Image (cartoon, rainbow, N blue to C red; front, side, top):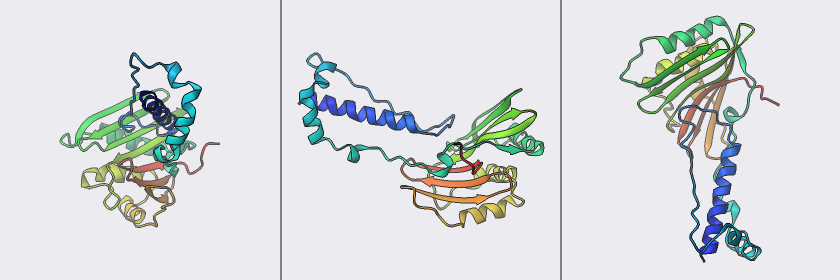
Length: 232
């Protein structure tokens, strides 16, 4: 019996590791909480006994990998996309937003780092909502690799007044002429429900696709900007 339990633990651990390896989420501060699983061998067990051929038939009979597999979804914003270009005036808006004297009662952490090759910026609010941008500088032009505002799962009211400035700034940077109206149109747009456990809403702006994705199973709602052209 101990051998069966140990073998099941190893298989479950391998499944979770494989799941984590396929994730395309490149988030920096939250990235979801890391899942750690350890296996401890007692004195009467060993790796050889677990992997012995006499255990394999029992594992195949008693363990259904389909039932145990963690829920995985590949929503549009989670896939790999080509970076999109931003004009200098929009890049300046990002810098100004992250460097201005914002309400410190709302902000837990703030980070802004810039080199000759681009910059990366993050704001973490006290409710654990996180806003970040990552831009590469190539031949004096800026290309957005990542832009996300992500918070807890709230499909009906995805972002409250605390995050209004961040929401409207993202939409303004994406090329929306009237960010407030654009956002209302986005949350009123048809919901794409073919991704299990998630709802996706999209609206094209001047420079980027604006994507609002809410997934209940990982307790996240993301507002993302990306190039609708995916990487090959």
